[in-house]
Amino acid sequence: MTITYKQLIDKKACEKQRELFKKIFGQSVTLTKDIVKKYGSQFDVNWLAKNFLNEKDYREYYEKREPFLKEYNEKCEPFLKEYEEKRELLWKEYEENRDSFWKEYNEKCEPFLKEYNEKCEPFLKEYNEKRSIVFFEIVNNNKEYN
Image 1 (cartoon, rainbow, N blue to C red):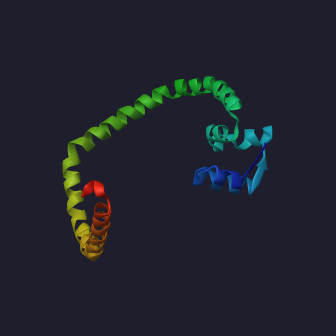
Image 2: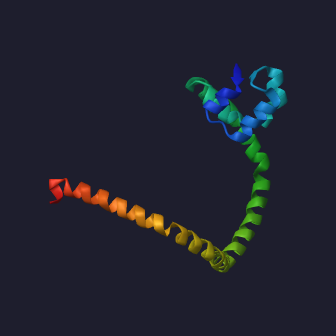
Image 3: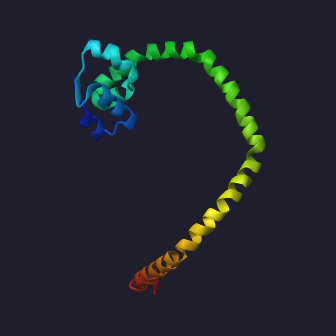
């Protein structure tokens, strides 16, 4: 299979993956076992499978990768628990302080919003006038509303 940089753009691959592809392979690559072994772990192969394989081959890929995913999850489970415990502490701290953070944020944003509203006031007035006329014309030209 040959994959091109243009295909990645057309299939809307994320920018990070496109740039990595371009850096390593340039405009295209023909996949070989050696290339896959050397570079495969750097790319989102699940995305490639979903976007480049037909439905039957994608199902086969999905089924064959399941044991690897299970093994990975089993190996990482203790680390996930550790991460979740640490994250929970931070979340608790955030929750305890959220109101004060939110108040400070709003106070700092207030002058920016005021400036924005002042600058947009004439345009808002114009917009409201135009949409009012459109509304009136639609209502006025439809017997259902008269």
